[in-house]
Image (cartoon, rainbow, N blue to C red; front, side):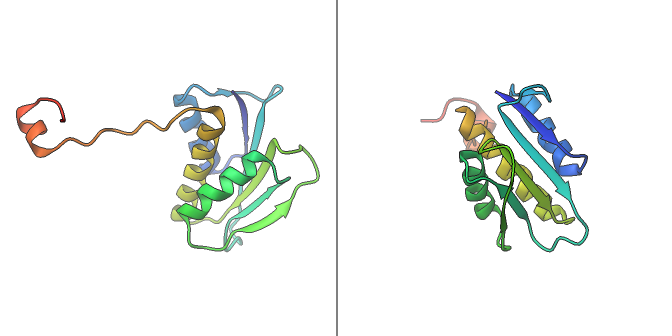
Length: 132
């Protein structure tokens, strides 16, 4: 999937790193989806702007799971349902919430799954062997 992540904020850079590790094609030339991430010092809560497309709905759903702060919704005048814009407050907790929400939404849209490490019991760690 061709994705363009626009912005120079720490969240945009982190999201580019996550996507590069999961075989997304990061490009500015004819992307399938565009994510614009901006960090503002005066933002009190996350602001999500889009055109009610699939990407916006999935990001909103994951962002609601990651943060208890209110999320302001706005409508973009361009891009159809393939472009979203996100304004991130300058706190580390909010940055991580936005990064993971957008990343999980893109994984969901592309049909990929997030790779999670399987937990092993203390017996498996000490003695090896497989989980029953």
